[in-house]
Image (cartoon, rainbow, N blue to C red; front, side):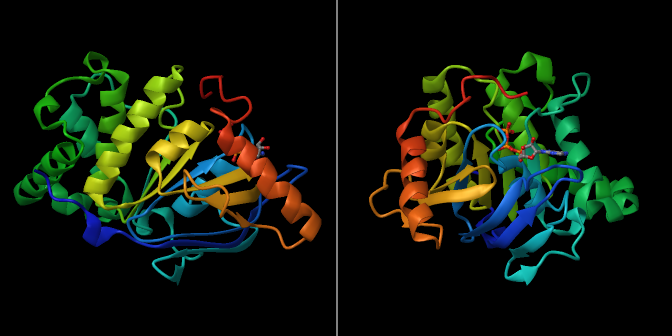
Length: 280
Ligand SMILES: Nc1ncnc2c1ncn2[C@@H]1O[C@H](COP(=O)(O)OP(=O)(O)OP(=O)(O)O)[C@@H](O)[C@H]1O
């Protein structure tokens, strides 16, 4: 069996994380405090526009906080460009090249990120051997070792998603960020089954996982902890099956009574509002 990547897992800490998109009237993310332990899986769950993607983009270094901090492995990430964060992200569409086979799609991941600076080394024969080994390792990790010569259109959506994950894992990230990876799967039961499959995969990888979804069922199936977001604010953080012990996230007593209840209601429903629609 392929080796896990646990030795690479990194802690993610968000402190007072706030982001205003340029020109937007309201903050997309507002004062979010969260810690994800090395190797743990956290699902961000909330309706469309809750701020999930923005949090993931802030962690991946694709945009910068207006206020607050992202700490990776205990270190401030503000000055770290995306390519040096050891964070790999898969956003919505998998963006696979249909005319390249699976191995070539995964190898494409090596062109970006931290290894981009080693492009010349990878172009040498020994560099190519290293790249081929990395690609094989990544495909084995997602259990697609036998699919290297297939092309994406020949694969099921679930397998295509695994190719996209392998392309992220080829850089051996410490943190894996998945944004609504099952957003195009309409059937809730199937989504929950696929999410459980991703949970198994995550446990084998040992990488720290941040996972955004509008589906409470999917969030519970994939993650050790679930954070409910609404209007950019963290309403509730809880273990998936736990709600009674969930911690209030707001210092204002009135809001603290109200907000965790709203969060619990969201977790108690199969989907958060507007979750029926496929991801844009
Ligand atoms: N580039 C942008 N410019 C301006 N506003 C933006 C931009 N991207 C997102 N927003 C706004 O920020 C808020 C949070 O959006 P975000 O995409 O983070 O939410 P989300 O929870 O991921 O939603 P979805 O489930 O639809 O992906 C929304 O009000 C959205 O309209």
